[in-house]
Image (cartoon, rainbow, N blue to C red; front, side, top):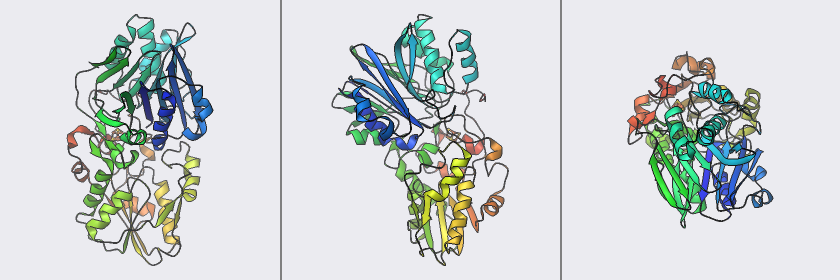
Length: 453
Ligand code: SF4
């Protein structure tokens, strides 16, 4: 998962893009970057760390122009290095021809990588977006397809997930895989086009929402106006359900759904038929807040923010190294002193991946006086890896991959554990057939090919 932003037709575009990235910082904290187009030239800056650290006012002043794209990175392919930070530049004869930023993972990456290297191009980093950039650049400038033709070829050749922005000295392109795995929205800022992963970025910029970029489409802005093409005929949609469960901000509208509302409904669905007795419902902040609220309301139980989160640590799921993840748990959460004493708690979380974080939390809650800890999880057990842009580990590291619910509860030290069923989850969205559930079911969407890892 990463976040992208782009703007066309507004002076100081790089500053606007940086603000849009800041609103989407939760989608990636590893590195970030912005590229801008001005007077026929492309400029770019990339840095490690957060937007406010890596993209200061001085840096943005060196990226002038009325068009820009940017990216916040959360690593799924490749480590936390500057080479893997985006946007990537495609160079030809020593001149940058375009910059590219993408969200998602490509499932036929090895095959494309071999093809690029066979054409004599080296890959500097190890991530997907660089492969997209090199493939499109080679087809556009060596094979004579031009950018429109090369992007159209990419849509036929690349499989998997991509919501991508491409900036030339004169044009901005946006294109999205035909299954629509990752979100991408289009807005209007007093006549300028704004692209972003989540609508919260449009709200921040006070841009008007126009539409979710249709999956399979290629949009282009330039001096001649706006053009729209079908890159690939509509295919079955496979929106990532985890965007609604965990990743997106609750104040975003993603895949036509209000994220906070879906989370509240998940909480209600979790409560249905639950007869376990308890005193208090607490969320594991922040992505579970609305789920816990929905659960508490449906059960007629009090709701409280019993755990306080330190927002400056970063999300544990995002931290790429196991060591960082383990250390960050106790730095990240702290219970209200004395408040949990003697209580039978319902603890609501959005999902369990490895189980390391929640296990430590259960222990921490007991050490702080909780009499019982009942875990309520707002998604089905994760039993399979994701190949479309989410950093889930190999199957044997997933705590629920080969264990029953009872075994997981025991391992985590919980009194009871209840997951949301797949049917319960599907019932929370308006069009359940338009979503991907492969990490729960192992049924990887057809047409994305067998994941090559
Ligand atoms: S496998 Fe899971 S995390 Fe990956 S895209 Fe599908 S629903 Fe999202």
